[in-house]
Image (cartoon, rainbow, N blue to C red):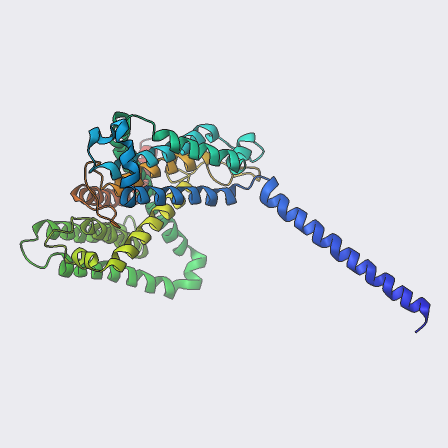
Length: 411
């Protein structure tokens, strides 16, 4: 090989290395710009969920292990000087700080429509400033007087109830959307057998869950309250199925099967929320005797709280019972920022209530969540309301069509 050929090879190799270096540099710059420079609302929602998760863990830590630190707050007349409610007081203060943070974000991002709006940048960026705001509001709540915190605890009952209502509406709408998608012509042709199998499994699963609850939580005729809860759940499952499969609705078996499982789950969680001293709640007694079961249940419950808040917050159309006219444009925001932060603000009230058992003067055991008769009745009411909302969503279109036909016939 001649010297000229070697020189040419070295030059071509240098050019290739230079192109690779420029490509790597350009790719890194683009990645950094996408992560740190441009607003990314899809990534931002996960960061808000992380803040919410950390707040939950902080509230739990103060409730179960922060009595020695919270005892210093007696100088502020916390709980009128009583030590038994220090944990609940700490949970309410952490919850209040989280609520204030997301409520400020709600006020500053509500009615944002387009991605080029400056409020999109505030929602998706400025994380150091928002972390300082979150930590500052959380710290300020520990300087607030105890009567104000107790007042917030009373208001939180209504905010947590509103959160549960929005959540069940979102779940119900998702079940109906999934049912409509599965019953479409294209899906029916491709997955007809699979849909039938899932429908049967869900319906049988809801009935099996009821049978197991009778065995586990109603072992004797003296467990009248649990028998009432389970029997009403059985009636609701049958009623949901009857309405869904009626000749005027014709919704099939998938939707009532999924809704039946959801209703059974709510009944099970309500009975599980009964005090562990309840003689009819044998499963709860077993859970308290095995620490790892109690800890695993607690961790799963916290994850479910965060996931439920996250999924409900991004479903900004769950309260729109009529389809909005017009198609979405490319520069529209992917989800409602204001609704997202409002749901998280109400979620802050909700986790406060389940950490204190919906009763600020109620002492909670370690590694327990949402235990007490108040929690039981809240979840039972949520179950009954979920069934009512589902039935209304099924029969409402039939009523509207009947009225339209009647009005057109009169004209």
